[in-house]
Image 1 (tube, helix red, strand yellow):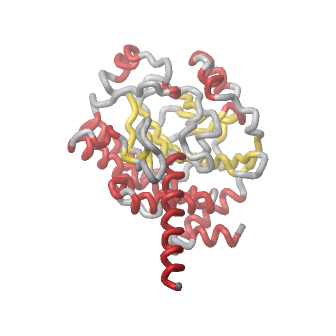
Image 2: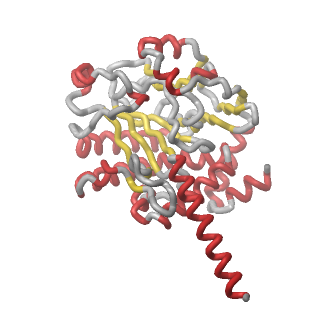
Image 3: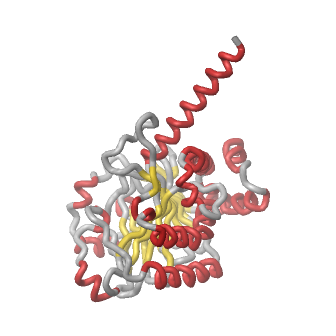
Length: 339
């Protein structure tokens, strides 16, 4: 293990490597639990759970406010929780900048998602009365394949999402948000490197190759080095019901935190009987494709937002195929040159 993690961390500068080693030590001493994920409900079964049951489901779960590791029965890390890892000064700066950009750039410009299982059965009228017209919804800065388009390297190419490209004003608005969230993303990425070094390094390599193969995605990595995620989703003033993100990386970890003012927010992993506090200084990494999850709030009425950094499985597969094709082509060229 030591050899693998040292090799994974080798791309980091010495100062960053020391911080990652400190985080690694914290996780090595953290409470660890293993669960069987084979019997977890399907997406259809999860969607049948009414919104009215979520409060009681959250109440049945044990609160976690200390560093924590969750593994599957094969020993694979599927969740790593680190409370108070984001410094108070960074959280306060992010809160200030986030509120400013939301007020100036996104106020009245949000839309609730369509056909999104995680935000099903929302009441737009009630949310409008509470937060104002079009002040609730999702913001995505992501790389994915458009619905129905080819996903092979021969016929298809992943693209940044359409909302980002809907005119120069929209593009400027979204790239400013990327800039605001970059420092927090960097902290969560460092913790990812400590919690699961090999997974982190593999995703860093994939994102680096994605920038090279699809130049338009470079805007997603603004002011970021060693990025482990190509996409993020910001959920603003919306209830999030239990679901799995089936299109996310199957073997990766999604990074999550809250932004803005504290509002008694918890990430609930009901199948593990656990809920993790999500104050602005807290962060969690988890396999969002395998673990059913939802957000529970104990303080209603307050404005709130949750950001998730993730990769799409099909994009990772495309990058891997592209890289392998180029490697084989280079090998053939070398062999022909020797003949």
